Image (tube, rainbow over all chains, first blue to last red; front, side, top):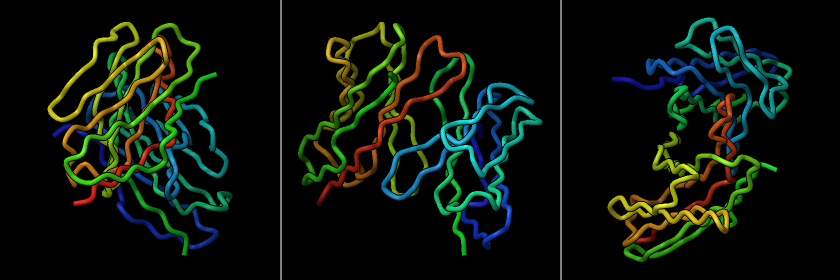
Length: 112
Length: 116
């Protein structure tokens, strides 16, 4: 089945650690996005990528890093510089010809 | 300015009532897309509908209907005969048609509670 897979579903991080959230899509979509969602809040864009080996910062990129070495994959690293990383993280992708974005099931990150 | 406003933070109705979720947008683009997404408690955002700015025809899909009014920059979503399974957070979003960076502008969401 075509879709977007995020893993893990739940992730716990100790303070000072870097963690990487996985996002894979088999929809052959050009664009991929990472969003952060805090409880009771909307979506805030962290990073997005339109093509392989290229990505742009969104509204809240500080403390995060990404890579886009393959079209199918857009991993997000939450670094120790991100002071308040506990949140729900959503990955999405969109085709060049189709404007709607499709989402993965999300990763819930908790700092312990 | 690019902005999407969902003024209703939370709506609570009894099952079988009709309910309308409001969405007002601001855009500098002459052609654009509008979207509605549903976020059930599981967390995944589910795509519901896309509307192009040059197509103001309203759409009905089962119990769901959408009213696009370009004159008032609104794209409202109505659920008829609501059901408990409709309980979710609903997001409205906007994107420029010629926007090459695929950025979506999101509303803050409306939490819909359907009581049995």
